[in-house]
Image (cartoon, rainbow, N blue to C red; front, side, top):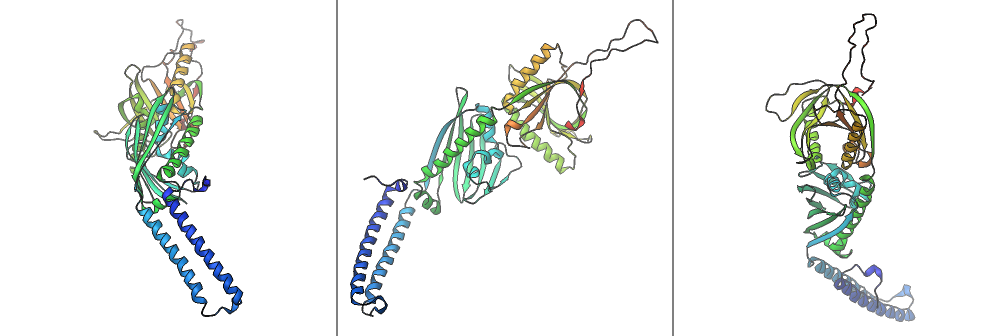
Length: 424
């Protein structure tokens, strides 16, 4: 005989115990109603005699005792179940590994794809100042549960290690990322211990593997759906030649691998912003990165990660943060709307424009990227906006060799668009 589907998730031993006690309760109930019918034949229900009442009370006591024994048996059964659990789920995600890793590594995106948050829109989430990489954490309080998630270690584009505490149930979490022909295989694993209360919940939901496995499966499906649109939706537009106005800024300068630029910018932007807030320095404009050099052979770049400020300041020697002025310059501007993984497409399109229009770049620096709409403003990568500026050599000013005071003219460069000062 096939059991109804509603019983399929219950532990077989526990189900056997329930069936056995249920049959016994039905047996005693049948005896009770037989006795009740015999009593009714002799007397009206309203005129029970004192000799019969003890028999009825005896049946009730038996039923109560059986119920108590069932609860004790259930408690013992649950208490003796294994408290440790290991759950693992994998899924192929339709996104490049680096984009997927960076998205999952930022806890601000957690509420967009984890089923605990997606299915509870009233979930109240608190984040650490830095939500990216090792040491970042978030805590939440919702209708179903309260908990905390902390990132303990990160290996770039490879794995993320975390600890999670849900209602006192602590687990070690790992996410690993592997290339699979343009897509990425994500393996999500949890290992931990359950409290007695969580054991009860797991018993009635098919065990820890099914309970946590369902959360993992829903979350990975959300991640795939979210990134399939958010990462792969983008637009590149070459705006042409513009003039950037000068700006004061604070920066930290160092050499970075290409793969670490995104992580480093997030960390340093947060660091300099905190520095400004602690020292009452007024920030004016959007953050930007100056790429001084860009070595495609060794995949290394010297960068200055910058926050624009209202007034110039003096910083003592030895500080990691420096103060400087960016002079005005002409540049070819390209706007990338979408995830940063499409930056190379924007660079290629800009270089093609420079070549087609025979525009020479200025070797003062490689390029400048300004993040007019970034991850701090919105969690949707498809809406991020990055302005890329390739500095160009100033066009020479020609003067006629013949001097004629009444008709002297100056040939000036073609008009260029002037950028509004609020962008820095």
